[in-house]
Image 1 (cartoon, rainbow, N blue to C red):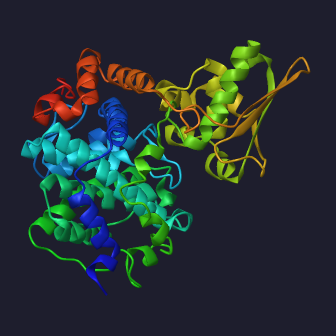
Image 2 (tube, rainbow, N blue to C red; image 1 turned 180 degrees about the horizontal axis):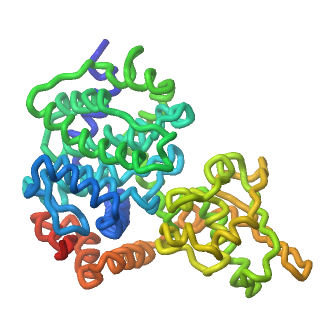
Image 3 (spheres, one colour; image 1 turned 120 degrees about the horizontal axis):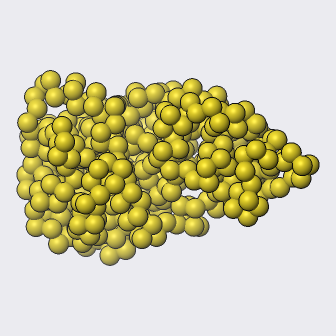
Length: 448
């Protein structure tokens, strides 16, 4: 078999040898990074991140890499772990719809941590991120949908390949060690869907970021992996749920870009719930509905919506993947931001009372991402609204201004409102940054 017949060899050559990235792909990379910084900084002081810093800091604090939204610093692998978790924590990050991978958290976090420690430029960061995200999503394409259906959390399992590729590019590795970095990553790919409603879900995403750094550093130091570690009979894809999609996944490499199919969330919850929120907000606005008028709420959606979101809410994690909670807060408050998905909101008596009036019903003919909400009112009227393309979808995307406003609001919630405008302005011009360390200083909280 020729070297070019191996999937890892082709991907390694692509990552190491691609020089001219299309302007629209670079711009989409900046959109992804603006969204990432907002999400990560907004969650940087969350209790889950406090715990991570306390545990990881015990092995050696005072490193070279910033923790977004925090005063702390850790070594690059640990910083990448924490920043990937914080970006993914609130289900507010981006989504590659074909695979349901959240591309940016496990790839941007290691790139930023290594770039800060080694003094890399903004252009190098942007190119490394874009190429890493491309590898992550194409590996995901090769095993979707059976991989996720078998219980693998695809953001974590495929994120490690994107992280390894991105850091290899940032380190300037040639095609062969980049190939080996991907093979080493295959031995570090993990994360299960069963853990989605717990903090263990985020551990998988953090591990993908950290392990990607390790894979690239080991490859840089001379470690080798099996040539067919990704696609072989006993390789990663076959072991983790079938890998018959490599032909399509590798097609048009370098001319068709998966990042251009990335989407961004206007609401911090499961993406299949967004149409439910849109429909509820529309009904409330168009008809002046108040909660006291509502006798019953019926949400119709396809099997994926019901499988992911028809659940009892016991805490804020349940709330972020609950049809009932999403409908209740949208109808009750007329909004669905981060405050509507906190523990306090999950346990609020009025919200819980309205949640109990919400019933989810299967509408098998409805496409993924769509929903119909019907309100039965106390005066006997029935009002309904259908959303086929939720806000933030490819059909109704968030604009650059939307992403700027989202990141600004998240930084304000984190107490960094004064830094938001200068940071975001620099992110939109990231390719002009000569040293990432100045930019990263704008992300740090000054309070301990």
